Image (cartoon, rainbow, N blue to C red; front, side, top):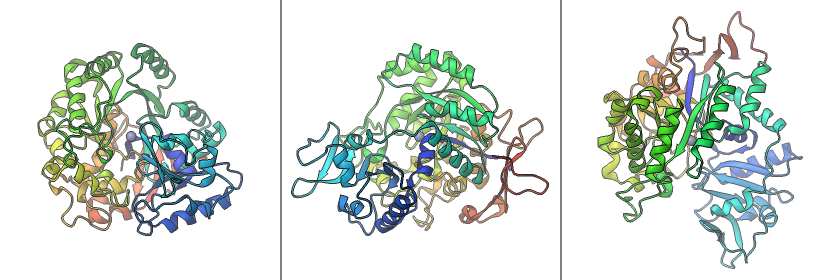
Length: 490
Ligand SMILES: [Zn+2]
């Protein structure tokens, strides 16, 4: 098959996940503690022990029962810091609290909560902005450490059959490292790069920087071509923009991070300079705002193929606009009913959005039926990097233990063929690469994945059991075995 293209992820962050203590697959608190203990033993020189994807729902840890002493018993000589699954909180040990000077007299920072016990002592659970009090002390990775972490992440991507990734932002500090790896012949995956445009940015100055980056990174391996905007947050924490209110908090409408007029002008400027615009928009109000801006700049939108990232709950009337405008819907199917990904969080989305709005939840079927272009990705490391998990999920819309029984909003399910398409040619189109990638055709780059069995003839439930036999990028073997091919020296 054509190699998988992940249309939305955060590669540098993912490399940290691979390098640090990743606990996404831990199902209990005691598994987390075992991982921490093993990692501490294997990394005696690490000043800070950092973990990712800590869950809210461990069955052996009642909600709110976390206490720093649990980490202290395992590691007391060095600070420990775990990010939550959605990076909205952190859990730390006593050493980390001391390093940050947090004690019973420390006031909660604006937008954050230091959780305390009945004696007023911090428990080590830091919500929202309180996590930054500690996070800012973690020393950034050196270029050497980053290179080593990136090589591990590249090996993981190759083992998943991924031949291109499209960066959704916050990777700026690794561009030059990627180039070095490319020059040494060690870049085993192609990269499409973006830069985030903040609401406070001077857009003209930002465009000048982006234009330089586009000149510097413009080949088949590394291409810079995207301006990324964030319009809202996520439904789970009531920050997705829902002007009609949340089902569980009708007076809450979430946040819109840009003034509409400023955003619209910035989009038009960025497209006029020939860049592709990506807009993070999860709530219906944010999706509508993005589509309005794209439609207002109709001529450039036809050329630039602006994208809406996530598209979790568009208004019914906005679904057909993707086709009309030529905008791309970029979705992460693993986020549908995320029981395997976020322990204990699988039902939260529905509580926020409301049962009567479910028919338009992650409406992949409806967007395709209306002729819209769809691309799939993961948002890795928020979600597992393996494309086969997302492909299964888009088709069956169930967790791995087949919940809910008849699928979550099964009317929005797609076929295996459509899911494979969104992970290959669809993603290539969403990155302006369909002339070179995304299918096996004469004149295209030989970016290929060989699976041990045909996904089109499998029970869709069993798709994650398929094995990647080999991955080739530009005809070079970068993972697995293939008769007559030596593994690329990476
Ligand atoms: Zn993202």
